[in-house]
Image 1 (cartoon, one colour):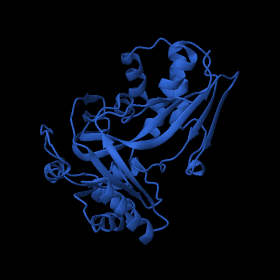
Image 2: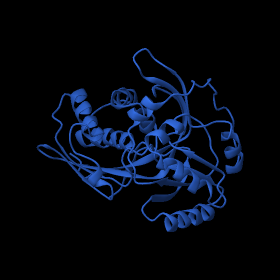
Image 3: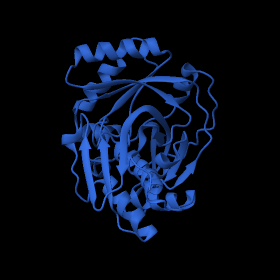
Image 4: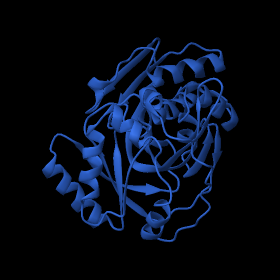
Amino acid sequence: MPQNISFFAPAKINLYLHITGKRDDGYHLLESLVAFADCGDQVSVAPSNEFRLTIDGPFSEDLSTNSDNLVVKAAQHLAKFAGIAANADIILTKELPVASGIGGGSADAAATLYALSELWGVSASARDLLGLAEKLGADVPVCLKGFTSIVTGVGETIICGIKLPKLWAVLVNPNKSVSTAEVFAKYQEKFSITQPFKEKPQSAKELANTLSDYRNDLTSAAIRVAPIIQEVLEAVEATEGQLLTRLSGSGATCFALFETKIAANAATRELQAQHPKWWVKAISLHSKIEPTKINL
């Protein structure tokens, strides 16, 4: 049995997010362009005679180890699929803010499926893992794939192969957790018409110009839940060189796109100086950053 397997769980960024309808069961239909960042959490697993989840990292105190944790749910679903006991020693290093609109929990679940499949020697196909991911949450399937994608339906329909130019961005969260369910409950706007993203931008500026025709439909609802999001958006939009400022997911994390790493780093320093209690992170976005094994 392999020892001490670790996977990187990248943050997910919604470059746009349209709400296109609502099913009879209450779930909203969406259309979103999703990309992945070079920052994220880490999931490490090791053999054990029992199940144990330990959480460390800067946001460890904001997350519980009970059955609501998506890492726990992922382990239980995979063990049930394989017909084995869910015995493992799991360490989740939480680098991303909790309930922040950048898919941290979903990425953690995806990384857990990969890590435990290897630890337990589970012969699961990509289709098998995707089926398990769909049971865990709307964002888990796209996090499992790790490609820049158009996501539709309730998250189950994923169109990969979207090519983006090299992108630099800054993520900003006011250290405020936001309930996705509460934001959707506050959503009052009209549903958007389907607006598929078919463009092939060749530069960050071109992408930002294209995305200006899109939006995040949850922004107003998120601000009603957490008014500080408006302050974050205004602060980020005021940074020099930003090409586009937007809320990611249901918040409270906002982001701005930049043309260069230098500009993104300068904006990061500016925001950190102005708002020392906020979480501010310069990142790059890539066409593919799946949960990736870390060589220890």
